[in-house]
Amino acid sequence: MLYRDYIEKLLQLEDVIVTNIECSGRQMHIHLRMQQRLHHCPKCGAVTSKVHDYRTQLVRDVSISGYDTILHLRKRRHVCPKCGKRFDEQIDFLPRYRQFTNRVNLQIFEQLKKCRSIKDIATDNNMSPPTVAKIINEIDFKTRKLPEVLAIDEFRGNAEGERFQCILADPKNHKVVEILPNRRHEMIRHYLGKFSNKRDVRFVVMDMTGGYRKLMKELFPWATIIVDKYHYVRQITFALERIRVEEQKRLSDQWRKYFKRSKYILLKDTRKLTMDDRIQLDNILRISEPLRKAYELKQEFELVKASRDREEASRRLSRWIMRAQKSGLPEFIKVSFTYQNWSREILNSFEYPYTNGYIEGCNNRIKVLKRVSFGMPRFARFRRRIMHIMLN
Ligand SMILES: [Zn+2]
View 1 (cartoon, rainbow, N blue to C red):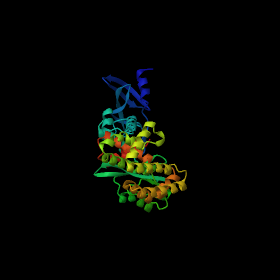
View 2 (cartoon, protein in one colour):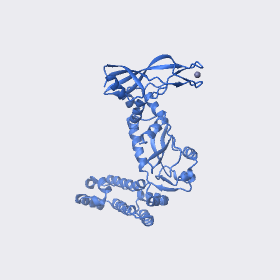
View 3 (cartoon, helix red, strand yellow):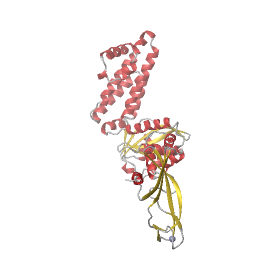
View 4 (cartoon, rainbow, N blue to C red):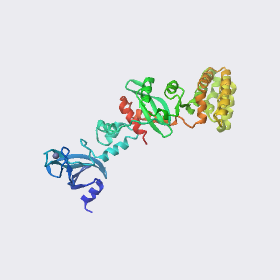
C-alpha cells in the first residue's frame, strides 16, 4: 500500500484525496482536498460543481502515531452558474468556522468527562482554554421531563458570589436533572414550576438540612418524601463523636490514655470488634457515664436500622426516641427531636429503596473538579462541566 493511501486510510475521513505528506519534528503535515461533488447553491438551489477559486485552510486533526497532525485542506469555492452566488464547498468532518476536525472535538469532549481542569486539557491538546471550553458550550444539557424519583441536595460550590448551589438529580436512573446557581426557594420553585409533568414525580429524596421539605410539599403535594438513610444514621454518629470529644477533654490525664483509638472503637460495628477492642471499649464505657449511655443509644439504633418493615421500624424508632429523650444527653435529645419531626419521612426509607447516594457521588466529583480547577468561579461553566462529567 502506498504511504499516501495508508495515511488516507488512517485519516478515516470520507472522500479525501491526499496529495502530499511532510513530517517535520513532531508535526505531520498532510495536504489534501475533497473529492469533487455536486453542490446546491444556498441562494437559488441550482446544482453545480463549478469552481470559482481555491483557498488553503489549516485544520488540526487528532495525532497520528505521536505526530501532531495538521491538515492543509485545499478548499473550493463554488460559483452558481444561475445566480452568481459564491459559496464554500461543504466538508462533513469540519463544521464552519472551526479549525479542528470533528474527531478532535470528540476527543476533547471525552477528556472533559474526567475531573480535570480545562487548562490542563487545553495544554495537553495544544489549544487555548477558551477553545476547549467552547466544546461543551455547544451542548444543551437541559432536562425536559422531571423524573419519577427526584433527589435534592446542596453543595458548597462558591460560584459567582453564592456559597451554596442546589443540585437536583434522578437517583433511579443516575442522572443530574439540574444544577441551580443558588439554593434559594424562589429559585428552586421557579425552576421546578416550569415542568408540565410535575405529576410524574412520585418520590422526593432529601436530607434533613436545607429546609426543602416544606417547599417540596408545596410543589409535589402528592409525592412521598424520603429522608436519605445515610443522612439520618449519620446524626447518631456525629452526636456520639461530639460526646466522645467532650469526655476526652473533661477526663484527667490518668484516664485519657484509655481514649487512644476510641473514635474508631466506638464507631466500629460491634460484631467486628477484636478481643482487645472489646476490653478497651469496656474501659471507656466504665469511666464515662455519658459515653456509656450514648453508646447504648447507638446500639439500639442498630436495631431500628435492621427493621424488616415499616411497622417494625415505626415501633423501634418510637421507643428509641423515648429513650433518647430520657437519656439526659443534650446531643441525643436534639437528635430525638429531629427524628420525631421527620419520623414519617424516615419511615418511608424502610418502604422505598431510594437514597441520596447518587447525589453524594456527584458532590464528591464536584469537590475533585473544584480542587483541580482551583475553584470554579463562573457558574455557567461550572454547571456544564458537572452535567457533562455526570453523563457517563
Ligand atoms: Zn444560485
